[in-house]
Amino acid sequence: MRDFQIPDKYRSSVISEIKTERKKNDPKGKDYSPSILNFGKIRFHIARHFGFCFGVENAIEIAYKAINENSGKRIFLLSEMIHNPTVNTELSLLGVKFIQNTSGGNIVDWTELNSDDIVIIPAFGTTIEIENKLNAIGINPYHYNTTCPFVEKVWNKSDELGKKGFTVIIHGKVNHEETRATFSHSTVNAPSVIIRDLNEAKLLVDIIIGNIPQNDFYTLFKGKYSANFDVKKDFEKIGIVNQTTMLASETEEISALFKDAFASKFGENELFSHFANTRDTLCYATNNNQNATVELMKSDVDLAIVVGGYNSSNTSHIVELLEEKFKTYFIADETKLISNKIISHFNINERSENTTENYLPEKEVINIAITSGASCPDATVDKVIKTIVAFFE
Image 1: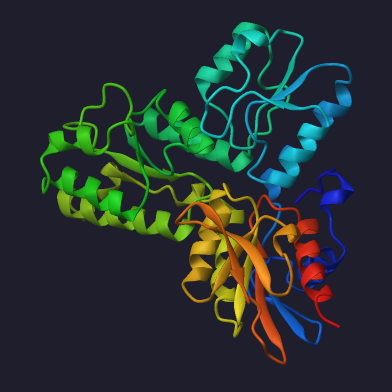
Image 2: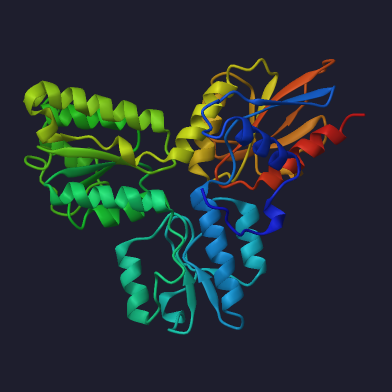
């Protein structure tokens, strides 16, 4: 794995030491047990894998390269570089402007751009339609393209499936930048459908095997299928891909559901003529982070803290997992730790920030599970740890 040139302000002192030590003792990263950081009164149980992944570090390196190479030019990002407020704010302070918000709404009109402008494609990638817009303006969309290689791997698999006559089913959030990009690329060669979760997968299986009238598909999945989709013939052959930040375990569960349904419909001998094995598209970083979170859940702790951007999909899934076992607080950074009595945190179900009092229990030793999303700098986790420790002698 290559080392990326990213600003030192995103690096850490505490976390870097821990990760270096773990990597030395477990170079393949297969020991998912947490590290224990003991400050006496406070004991942190730190997930084995978390923080910047390959795709995020690659994106940040390219973004700062674009800034350094284009002094005096206007520099734009299509949308947020990654879903982390610290990184996006710091890019804004360096003069980078955002063309769109995370939902695809324009902040800067396309007519305001010209061929001298620099446009950075974010880590999520972008749609073919936007690539064409930039080319028409005279801006090369691939010069500073930070699309994650694992997202591109999903696109390549979708392209391969389409050329073999398969329909692509995308496990993702329909309004997420990455899913919009994947859908745009997959529809070039394949009929495509987006499903949000296992419940929608079960609904789609019922349509395919005939438990629900086929024509109900167009209503139940409105806005989630490609143009000219033919429900009568486009579900003869399918392959599952995912938005790389979704729960890998859920993607595998969805894939198993369709595999069983197609085995029943076409028979085991004909299964792989109708169902494609796409497990190789699952993102290693998402997988590792989620496996480390599951292992973290075995710890005997009083609470869990997850650090990251509130609109970060992979971080939200980590919160969902930890909430199954612990009282979990999702915070953007150390400023949300108001005191040792009050914390401001995000509720992923209500989509709102709440304040909780007495979040740290009155105990001789407080055990805290801590992790972060793939787009959160280790330096931010450092600050969270140091802030909590500073509350006590």
